[in-house]
Image: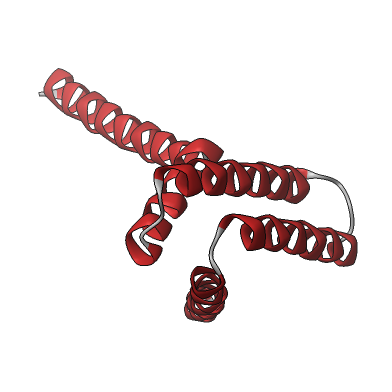
Length: 128
């Protein structure tokens, strides 16, 4: 009976370890700049009817922004410095998008950014 309980305990522990590792893999995958840039650019393609050339350029701009912003988040700098640099990165991406997108697409891009920021604020509030 004791061996049966130990075996069952081992199986349960192994199950929870596997589930935990799987969740960590998904979190790491969710932070992959290439995947994030692809999802964002795919969404832009649907919403703004991007041409293939626009898609490639927008992907490059998004990937550069996401990679730099993730690197900034991981840095040891203070919060105020990070916010300032993040704004600079965002402005640089906007300037690139202005040259990639048509005027109408760029207006829609700015609306999309505003909506995404609002959603992010709501998610933060719900966690508190």
